Amino acid sequence: MNVETSVRVEDKLFYNRYLVDVGRPHVKVRAHTKPSSQLLALLKVCPARCYELNDKGQVEVTVDGCIECGTCRVIGEPTGDIEWSYPRGGYGVLFKFG
Amino acid sequence: MIEEKFDAIVVGAGMSGNAAALAMAKRGMKVLQLERGEYAGSKNVQGAILYADMLEKLIPDFRDDAPLERHLVEQRFWIMDDRSHFGVHYRSEDFNEERPNRYTIIRAQFDKWFSSKVREAGATVLCETTVTELARDAHGKVIGVRTDRRDGEIHADVVVLAEGVNGLLGTRARLRERPKPDKVALAVKEMHFLPRETIEAHFNLKGDEGVVVEAAGTISRGMTGMGFIYANKECISIGIGCIVADFQRTGETPYGLLDCFKRHPSVAPLIEGSEVKEYSAHLIPEGGYKAIPQLYGDGWVVVGDAAQLNNAIHREGSNLAMTSGRIAAEAIVQVKSRSHPMTAANLSVYKKMLDDSFVIKDLKKHKDMPMLMHTNSQNFFLTYPQLVSRAMQNYVRVDGTPKAEKEKVTLKSFVNARSWTGLFGDAFRIARAWR
Image (cartoon, rainbow over all chains, first blue to last red; front, side, top):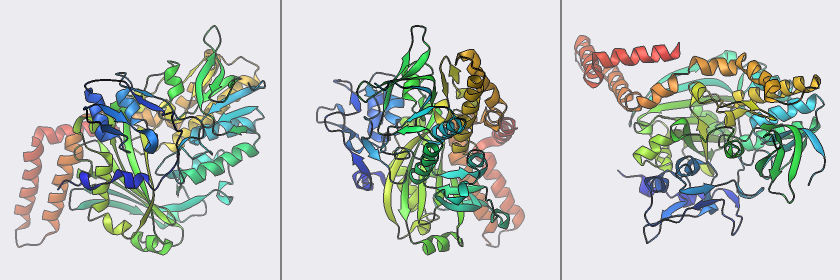
């Protein structure tokens, strides 16, 4: 029974409100050819599934659905794999309930 | 640039920041509070339970207008395996009191209200403003902050860092380390809406009575973690959290765990027919006493989650946040009232006061628990729950087997799984860490 594959994270993010800061992502992945184990872990652990593998096998981030938990920062910042900031004031996820 | 100089700048408008800003403003200090969200609460995530005692110390009559959900009359602890739960429930009519002790709340709404009290007390609250950096003088003393607004350097005698678990500013300024993956948990949560009467029927409640379910066991798949279900008025908060290092090691997904938890036969009927309206995630400090960083320095103090002040064993965080915010404010007011400068030596009174409070006393009491739970997660979150479930089933199922034989089977299953040394060792370790 592999239920994970049936969970559609995109549908969950659709419940949320966001104000996307177009062209100014608050998380960036350092350019790489082969992803580190930390970067690969983000593919699974990111609760908004912002991290994906591209067809060259590199890890890419799309921050539009980010719920700003900071998990990727805790894992990926120490190794320099990612750069992490808060979005500019007012941008990002806007929780109605929190 | 804002030319005005403030007595204090508070970074963040969560529980600790609001408590600090309110307590200082009430004492006549000139306070500026900066919040990156659209409004106070729009970036804040919690289960959430509010502890009345700690809020009463700041706003004695909060019950008159605070957006409270339900007062808790029942606590359920569940040990779960894949098909069962073994529960300890405590419910008392005593909790239907005039001034209830604990409430469920919805943070975005509650924090907005809390922030309105901060404004009423005279503080300036500036939202949609991300603080990007601490401003320091030539000697390294913190003299204010820089924000993402244009020319945004603002000065104050002291900066209260109430920036939450991620605490970017403090880390960037090397006041403390970034939380490590084995010292924080990642929790994901959904808000499930149902008609009021349905929630009351599902949880055996009447009026504004509320209940909390906390669950551990195979739902975390051997990782250190916990599921929770909180009944609000017209919605149910349901979520699960595990240590980040465990997620990293196992490759489990947080939404996968949440999905399994929701579909568990003991849980599914509680949320049946609900409409989901939000999905959130948040980090929770789990390192306990040993993870508390330096709490003060020249021109700054740190409070709440940013200072890792969370009691993971009792699952209390917001009250430690609120209390540390209030105590930091009292310490600052004390230094100011003596016309002393906000130096590390003078601000050390904050730590002294905090050490004397339940905040540090409780964290100290359980200082060895986080490590014990994290290093033995397979036993505590997988093996024992399965054993308990089998033992209970063996106990309650009537099938003609003599009781003595049944008990022998149960005992044997425990010894086989953990050995006598293991069982006694686990009991001893828990007792030692708990005392």
